[in-house]
Length: 569
Image (tube, rainbow, N blue to C red; front, side, top):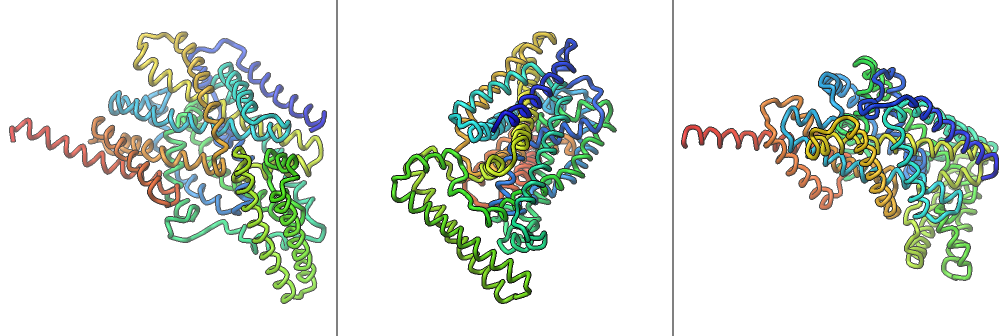
């Protein structure tokens, strides 16, 4: 990065931050700190909901996912429109009518205190861990750009976000998210246009799609019924519906965004905005990864995209094994490029047989290059335990820093920071608010006034910021951030959703039955996750259905016991 990139970064981030401070410069009470001013229009709600979900992980890690596995990951969002329509119809009116601060307050009103606390604990547990992952993503950017130590970068960035969130509150989060999202989208569009411009001359769109399809990167829909496959149409449509129902309907970080609308109509329109635009947006981000894959078939990629691993390789050139792997990898890639150039030439000449032979040779050379990369990774991790086993999260940022012009680099780095600030602020604000409402004011200090609750919320927000930093320090062990976030949610969200489904639709079930049913269902999900290898998208469905079924069974047992006591038999 040069002075122009830093200028773009500093002006953009400080401008958004100052606007948030200026907009919320008037004194805010506890209600506005958690829910805003209650006058948020639908398009701001829609952008806020989208920005809360679309963290830096989305824009940093998803292209890497597309680079590795193609478009198949988009199937996880197939159930999202269905889920948002259901939430707009059933969940939202209840939350608005009761005028709750948190979704878990409703569980307390519908069931009892222990069920409310269970729902809040499940939220705090999974969202607290998830908050650590969303700190780790921008730390990757800073480490790659600045060359700073990763752990020090995590701590520094985490503290900055924590301070920003404690000062801002919900209203500041909402009013700044639309500008943050605008920067993000501008950066992604700029990166896509420049990436297309850097593809080889003579490589048409049809050639690009044919090449990507030949390497199995364009299979966006998989109709397989094998539950062991991670991403399929059915797991995305069915399991994804339950995952998105859970996230948008039971996760306070999202509930807090759409209950701030000026009316139910405005909040519904904000949710439906996401139902329409989320899948196309994710498809486009994944397609950037596919284009990156095509680009790196003609441009020499690094043996390791992770900058720390690449630096280690440069500093230990004398190690014969690593040097041999680097030489063999470069030679294999040179073979890939030659054969693909032959394929392109034969394809344009209409020589089908020569084109097929060249592509087959390119595929064979690519398999060899991946085997070399795998062997080199094993060798590197044996010598440097801090190395990333899977460095897909670094693919996009490596392309940005090495290939894009200055100014655009600053815009993309700003986009990552904007995404991190928007999602992290919303998460920490929800964590602090839920801890205050569902624990502090509910259990510890029931007579606390709004001023004391406001102070407590800020302290709890800072506390969760520190927890997130601690978790982020261990995030480098994960396979891929965008997958890790969704896997984490799938483990907890099903049971959380089950609590709300029972509350809304199964009126005869009481608090004791649903409480124990939720604990049993959560234990079942943990056992299945560690014992089976089915796609994580099925766990929200399993958790939700198990919670509902166990609730009915336990309620029947409780009812029978009561009858026996009443009639003495």
